[in-house]
Length: 150
Image (tube, rainbow, N blue to C red; front, side, top):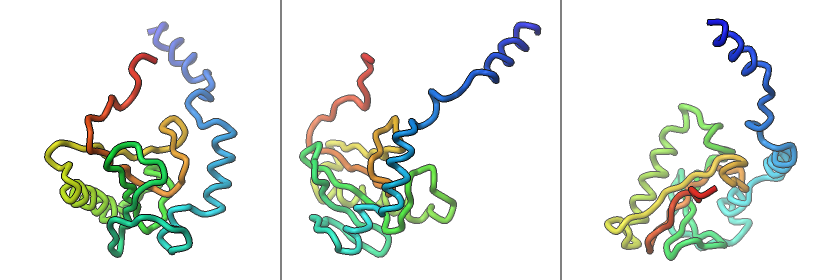
């Protein structure tokens, strides 16, 4: 029991800085949120995009840097910064994002061969646009989700 108490004390006294976002990332994230999302500008037609789907809740378009033969960004029109900012009120829009992914996969001939859906959240996942969005990727065999050698 004494060993467990000491381990718990050490764990509680250890700083968790390694589990937090870096100061630089936090600063950049805050600045980008204050400036407004590039996706909001696309939704408001302030920036051009190749739109492949749109309804009252969702817009989907081709990203500037395609990572697969079929690559779309599926974006809620409601500005939600990260998946961590989702509330119960957002359940319909999250469901709609998945439904739109299914529709686009079928329309682009990848529903049966396979596709990947990905939502990046914060620093370790590489999120750089702070407006929730889902990547739909397909059209070829996709590599592993992460590099397991590191």
